[in-house]
Image (cartoon, rainbow, N blue to C red; front, side, top):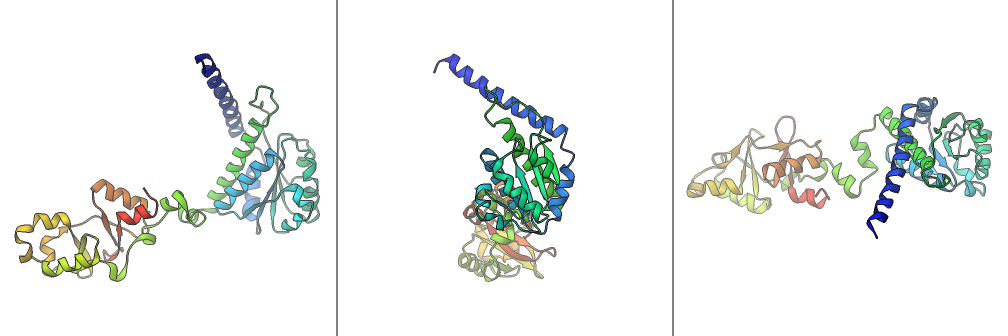
Length: 321
């Protein structure tokens, strides 16, 4: 490619992004009047939020449904053509529907509209035309702002689909926040992959019980070394009165090598060690380990009693790297 061709491609990309970005900003500055009532209707729904649309609107509807489901709102996508051939049975009283059509005149949605009207199922409509058939049938009307499509011929769904997707995200997030959805709730729906790992709690990854390398402060170092060797963490926690008061690491062993066997665990240990709570995120624990160049952290309860041990390798195996 020539420099002129590269410049033309970049100019096209910039124009598309600006066109769509300006449209989203315009919608943020003038949200549809029914937006807040629509969120409250979703929160009041006892069943599922059913999304439907055809073509590009169908693709967007699938994504919005997925976002709802992953943020605590039960949701499903129903294809309008399949709905007309039996899948209308998936839409039941107690559900709420979100029907998407930029023109508001999509023929494939007619059976869905009739079905929700027959069973008094609440309907949110997303459309670019306030006076369309779909909007007139809806209980909650989310009208997209008038904005040019980003393609050069002004016909390919670009800006309109971006607006619909952004509005769907806004609905899902507003519902999520009104519901009081927490990070631990989010992890319930994202147990796998990077997101699940980042939202893991220390308690979910830590070693407990007999696996913990704990020794009393007055234990001779000869016996302490046996415990450290058996537990294989390269570390020992030193306790007094049930509380963790120190930690013995390989570094502590090297610093005390000259008189190691003449000392007790409490004399060798580093006092006031860094610890972590069971409800903290494992990602936070990993950051503490990385920042302090250590490979393990003891987990303590509010009284300072050791209840677990988290090793750097546990975090890596969980996908936190």
